[in-house]
Length: 229
Image (tube, rainbow, N blue to C red; front, side, top):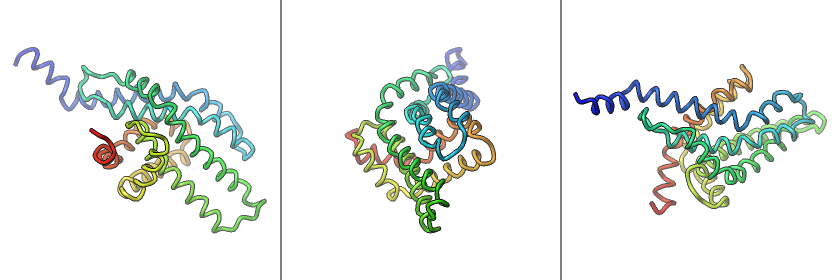
């Protein structure tokens, strides 16, 4: 076997592919934390009270662009050790998608903040049980919508109104994607509930990779039905 062929085999074998994936996840995780750490640190320091919920939302604002950049980088990951550039992909995704990500992330934050504040004051406002259930359903559906919207805005160039419509349409059009995203949401909730918010943050690149993997059908349909390519 020639030296060139041996090098190519080393760079594309199973162990090399696994190493490339781990490296990409670690770099993406590090850059996600780097771009969100000021808000996340403040969030951890804030007292968990209803009065701080608007401040909590402000602390989470950097998460939208960072999540979009991470999805962009992970979608463009390379299996060859010699062709890895996750940092460059992350920053490119951040530049391209930060504004678009905020346009879908901010409305979701507003909805979640209003739901959280209403639930926090449910005793004082004497909310009936069915209303609490309805608010929880709204929160779950809004989060599933956000998952679709972030994937679409991270990988495609559409107007915000079209992204919002597509994200809504795909909730019912691709039920397996929606169920998969719901499963990821449950995992994140369990990790946060039985661990810490910091533990969830440390697993975020893996969660984003699962989101991309589960959204393969959605991504394929957007390419096929809504792009010229």
